Each structure stands twice: as structure tokens, then as C-alpha cells.
Amino acid sequence: LAKTTQPISMDSYEGQEVNITCSHNNIATNDYITWYQQFPSQGPRFIIQGYKTKVTNEVASLFIPADRKSSTLSLPRVSLSDTAVYYCLVEAGGFKTIFGAGTRLFVKA
Amino acid sequence: DTEVTQTPKHLVMGMTNKKSLKCEQHMGHRAMYWYKQKAKKPPELMFVYSYEKLSINESVPSRFSPECPNSSLLNLHLHALQPEDSALYLCASSQVGSYQETQYFGPGTRLLVL
Image (cartoon, rainbow over all chains, first blue to last red; front, side, top):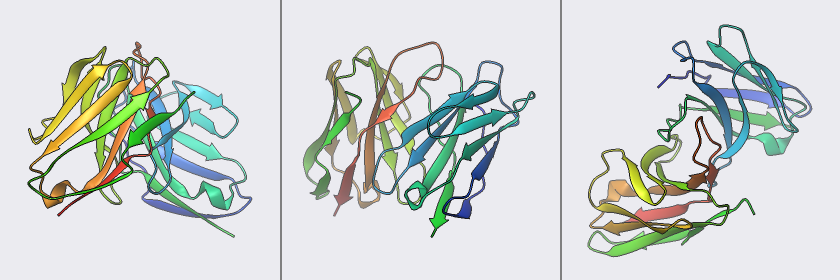
């Protein structure tokens, strides 16, 4: 299973775009990249998943370069309610799920 | 309905007690998971059931005993726990597919072992 590395924490202000980069140098051909968000005392919530290039949904975008050794989660115009921990996971099929340390995002007014 | 429910929300137990955590989903998912999460740490996978059969046991001590009575229910039986087992216990479910399926998590049970 590929190991992921993320910044431990990030600060931002309301209305700004936030980009969180995840490094996964040992990603395998069959691996997908998935991001989850977790608020205190709640379970993680799926944000976005991708394999290559760019994926966008109603809450975020995911940018994956051609070599797939990293990925960037982009949150447009963050608000105070986006303060949370963001986890990057890199795995192929199967059930063995390993969460990395995560990035604590703090959005300030 | 994309909800995973867990009961109880909070649980305090002594080291000699026996208790159970319950998880339920009605999304038709055939994979169900138990995770343990300590404060300011990521969730750690404990068990996975696929089609009601235990698929993964991450070398969890036998004082934790999972059970999957049917495709919608997942239990975690607790016996003779230690104070270091105090944590947030998360349940999740997903489809069974050929790639990384989205997991839907419950709100967790906050467990305190005295």
C-alpha cells in the first residue's frame, strides 16, 4: 500500500482558495487517490476521488499530475465550516484502508 | 439513505464489564468496517466484513470480538478492556467493488474504559 505524506497543518482565511498537496511516491498502477474530511467527534466524509488528471465535484477539485506521485486537493473559497482534518488515501481495490496523518486545516475569519 | 448509525453515542465501562457497540446501514452495502481512532490520530482499521464474512482482522486483541449478523448490522463485542482502549470507535460501510470504494462512516461511539 502506498504511503502518503501531507502537511500537518494549514491556516487560511475565509474566501480564499486552499490547496492541500499529498505526496505518494510509491503509488501503484491500480491505485486510486481518495480524500476524506473529518470534523471533530464525527466520522470521516468522502470528498473526492480520482485516478489521473483533474476531477471536480460540487465541493472540491482534485489535480493529479501525469506521474501520479502527488495530488492536490483544492477547496474554493473556504468558509469557517471547512475547518477540519483532511486525509489523503492511496489504494487499489480491496478493503485494507490506511489513513495517513492528515492535514489540519484551520480557517480564520 | 446514505446514513450509517451507531449506538450508543457514548459508553463508559469498567475493565470487567461486557458491552457491545452496534452499527447499522440500509444502503445495501456488503462491506462493513470497524475503526478505532485515538485523539488527534487518524482512524485505524480493525476489522472488515465482506458478505457477512470476516475478511480482515488487523491483529486486534481478542477482547474485541466483531459480529456481522446480517448484511445491515455490525456489532463489536467488548470484554475485559483496558484503559488504553478508550477511543472513538467508527463503523463504515461500502460497496464491494474492484477498486477503492467510497466508505460511508457513522458518527462513532466514544468509549471510556475506567
